[in-house]
Image (cartoon, rainbow, N blue to C red; front, side, top):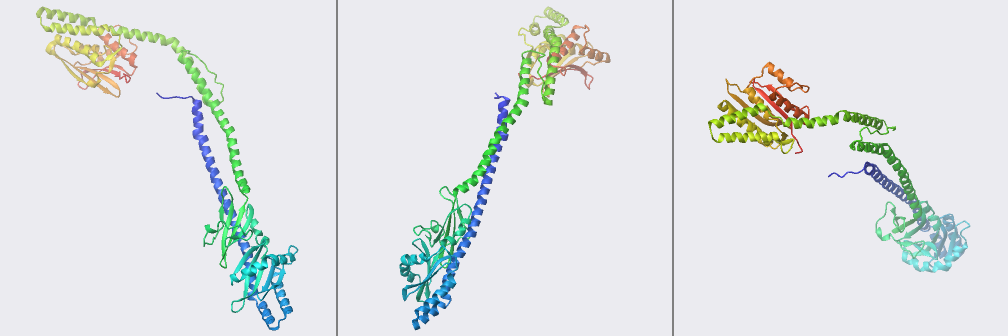
Length: 576
């Protein structure tokens, strides 16, 4: 059994399946695509800005390294120190070295302090500090008190390389100045202005904090190691690496200079990144909020403009089912389709009421009366002939023929009595009445009468009205038999296009007068009294049309051999 549900729930399901769910899927898909694109664009922005600022910071580091080499490449210090070794003029050496350092490093904003000492006398320090108000002699004092001894011990180990050290919170670059035999005769120490060198890191979007690692150790906090140093062993990154996770967002880049690895770590403000994504989420949530009233409006539109009018029509046809003919509905609606449908229903209801009151009850009573009356009819002339035959046989012989004829007559009488009160019977039962009649006729005419049957036995279970074939066969016998010639009957039963065709052919000929009489007899409006045989033909045709409709009934025509063919057309009942 088909499970049915109300139109309201079907509309809700349709809106959900065909509109709301696809719209949600589309919105979520668009949200994630937009989010992915924004994340990608954000990452590109961060990576691009990081690449740019790291390049600037590294240029400043490179500038300091190059500046440290000037003390070796420019021969001023070397010559001054050689003269000092010859004449011992310490004042002249101090003047020359101090002037050289002032000219080379005093205006380098990447440096706070530049100090130099000769390995022959490490206690005598030459220095200059940057020409601004932020750096004072305190830088020199800090170097002497905290860094000089450490650097003095460390310097021999670096040979011709440079080294970076954080001592007391100050970052120093250390380089040995070599003689021609590559022996260090002096050490130059530069305190780096880390604030200036790393100042460009705040140009990275969402910058929070920056750090610089040299060979895996932080220059800002020497106790801190580079967390990503081993993730990129022996490989120089061409682009910055951006990492976004639940604990910390950062961008990282590693470069190589003079056999040293410089790693830049920029920690990002996660709240700024989240805020950027929250904007997209808020827009998405706002769209969802606006979708709710839209869904309500759409549902209300369908409910009021479709569901409610259909509910009114549904109530109306239920009233018709209750035989409340003439029931009217209110067609006050702005929709043209339902307005026309309502008016059509009201008109139909009025018409149905009038027709039922005038015709239906009368037609139904007439149909039942006609069927009952027609089924009870039988030809009295036939009964008389049958009784005469029985009497004649009884006088001449005392054999089984009389018994068989009496049995056939009993079958005929059983058909007319209709004890079961069934309107439709199996074709096999109906044909048994025809067989009984033909047996009696065969006994009457003897060898002058023959019957041929061509029957599709698969159709014998189909149901047909009672006593529709026997009157036609009787008419064929009366029409086809003649004292001067032999009578022949052929009965054919076949199926074609869900219609049952029962044909009775006799070897009689239809004259023009007979054809006109038959057409008049089978017409719907014929009410003239006629013979009992003609009445049986007319009643068969009328019964078939009452039961099955105007397309069914009885036709009588001539075939190619000019023989008479009576055809019964019956609809096959598919529900049986």
